[in-house]
Length: 247
Image (cartoon, rainbow, N blue to C red; front, side):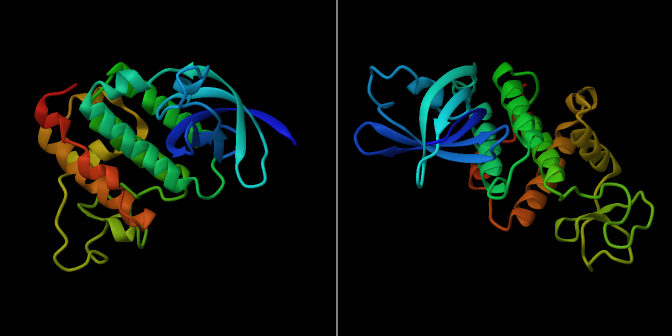
């Protein structure tokens, strides 16, 4: 059977039989891969710890009839322990890998893989607020998937902005003529924060107020879940860590 090698982020695992696991991975070149890792639940397993969620590994697999088989796994990024030891990092990471899993039903791109690896690495190092890392990831991965929100010009008619109404169902900010009746206004500072989250301008993001961060998070969650057509279950457990003073 054909054998191939790739870099992959572990998204989730499921038990199989007494000692095996089914591992779902987002790989750099082969998109989403589901494979059986045999014997990894035994204490004698040589690479079981490298195939846990949030880990990045260089894996060798061979193609099976329904599921591929993991032959080897070498660690490239051991982010799981640092993420799991902090609740806010853990919940944000879960929302990220769940989103990656949803988006990768179609063929994934190397850019999506690299974006997820970068987000998990930043979470493990505690470089920024976990919720802000998640928000930036959600905006950017949606853009990579062809659903970039309009944050300046009207998403419906293209009228040049700035506009002060954001409607997830319409694709971002909209002008007064296209805004549904009763749509709430969004502060320009919040829209500016959304643009910074999209661009990865961390000096601006880290300096944002609690109110701006919370407002932006709500808009991003609504936008991502609308376009995925199903709720991101992990988001229900993500805390607004800016309110907790976590950085």
